[in-house]
Image 1 (cartoon, rainbow, N blue to C red):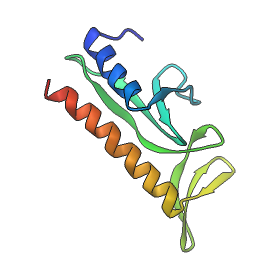
Image 2: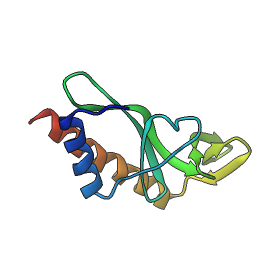
Image 3: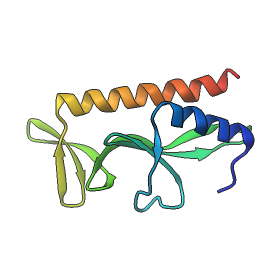
Length: 110
């Protein structure tokens, strides 16, 4: 993937905020970033920015977890693996999304 200088600057700000690259099946050729157990898939856009291609989620066994409701509980699910969507995990995901949005919004104002 070829990135412009502006996109590289966005990546540098994301790295400074603690985001790190990760390979996530089936997105190995995409720009995937994680922090802690949360991850997101980004894609370059015309004009030099980055956009969210796949919404941020919790990693389940190294793959994106889909948030589902099982009875009265919420879970992050990937294939046959499940991870309960505890209050702590949901707070971590919300903070991850807020940090990501702040860096990406900062890019739009420059």
